[in-house]
Amino acid sequence: MSRNAKINTLLLVVVAALAVLPLVLGLGDHKKEPFTGADAQAETAITELDPDYKPWFSPLYEPPSGEIESALFALQAAIGAGVLAFYFGLRRGRRQGELRAQSRQNAEGAESGAGVSAAQGD
Image (cartoon, rainbow, N blue to C red; front, top):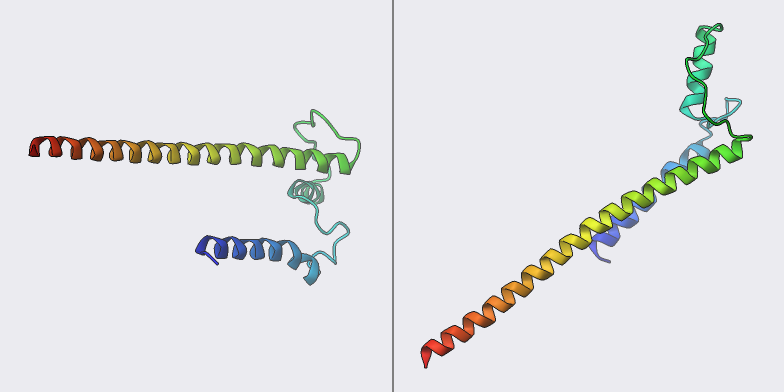
């Protein structure tokens, strides 16, 4: 197994552990909604501290259900991951192209240099 494969496997195991451990250990069992987002937790904390608090802004679009909200969030994450993957793939492709072009130039330079030295030897 190559070094990169070992690192990728280790990272995959760590990510899986981060996803599974909170569920296995029951970290959210004492809460009504155990794995709510930070926005919902902040809203709960603010209303506990100041029940008369009025938000400054309202959402531009309020999804009709939590499932649609989750789907939109997942779509946003997928688009962001796609943009990042495209960017890093483009950078890697450009770097590989530059290395290939440089190696071709070096090979052509070595061939023309060998031809010049052979012609001078005659």
